[in-house]
Length: 338
Length: 199
Image 1 (cartoon, rainbow over the protein chains, first blue to last red):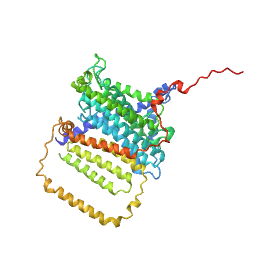
Image 2 (cartoon, each protein chain N blue to C red):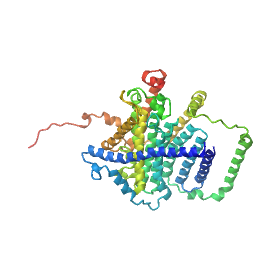
Image 3 (tube, each protein chain N blue to C red):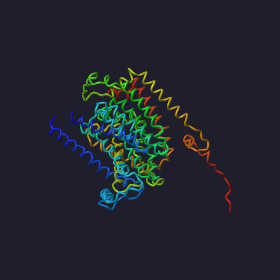
Image 4 (cartoon, rainbow over the protein chains, first blue to last red):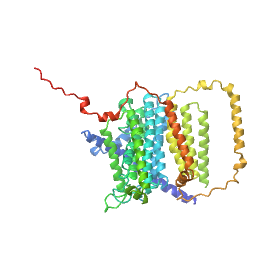
């Protein structure tokens, strides 16, 4: 390959990355707006309604406000780690999007170990939280970091097991192939034959992103704001961005793994990227709904749910599934053959 | 190919630097973070060797889970490194002796001439559709099933032993019993008393 050719490839790839990242950033911005509007509606108030028409420019105003604020570094904190922690939590949240298939052909990197890659990257996000909590040299931040570490390790196991179930019926680690294995109609999508795993996966996903009702790492009413209590300005904004990017990521993965990705639920309407986005938005709504509905779990209740409920449920369902595939029982075995 | 070599050098330099950092830094949390960096870089070098499954699993298991727990423990402990440093010069000769012995043994065991480039032909690169996840799975669950299960049982024993050693019954702590909470009935908690209204 000549120099020119590789340069061209580089430019094209960077353009593709921008094509994913820029809409992602916009989605994050308007997800915060949607969140405030939805929670406002649930609590019978208006939500943001002053900046722009119906408050539509509110996210832009928030970004500008955060950009102009000073980034404070507390005394006796570990300066380098304190400043690198927000980047460490944001980078995996973005990098994981490289393997997400938006449609049959639209995927940045069509690698055959895509699912593993996504799992590995989502498990790296916790370092931002832990390092931030430790480097701040504050007790509240430290408590938040410790809670987050224990929580993520617990729920990652349940999440991994739930995805093993998906692998067993699809027979592939490639995210595109996983969607293709679900072809058929709305009832052959994996959410139905793998229903317990779907539920476990999504709730573990909510826990992994430290969202309510699993937001003990922040816990405003207990430990002020947890791991990011000492952050301000853009450094805080990066944490915020990472949290929302992770939410979209978890929703998109749930869609790919269980809800048939870009496949159309209605027979006469063609498949396409639009379905992927619509389903992702549908799953994202649950995040907002949960936040407005459930009170925060206590720490020991989180641990109980993760270790004593979700892990046994996934192991049980994996056994059921394995037996079904072995005995060639219909829905599971048919999925396997396709 | 040249670019690959460049990537290799960059990541191996960072790897060696991080490994040195693990043993030279005085702060235990920093040492653990250096170890994370070392794991990550070695994962990328494995990736260059086309061992994608192992590389990603290294990140997933060691960086994503084991080191998180490690950091958890290291951060909780208030380790004072000064007392550990006290008898450094006194024990230095013994330490040097042990290190020397290890180096001699290693040199005997993995002599350069047994691992020269002539004995091991350059492996042929596989095509893009070659999945080493599948190959590994096949080898592990067919050819080496027995060894795999033995390893699993050993790990299970280790888990049970660790739990048995650290578990303490603490009758004074209060905890929730969700089953009882769910099964509670109105009659258990509420007593309706009929009484005449006064005045």
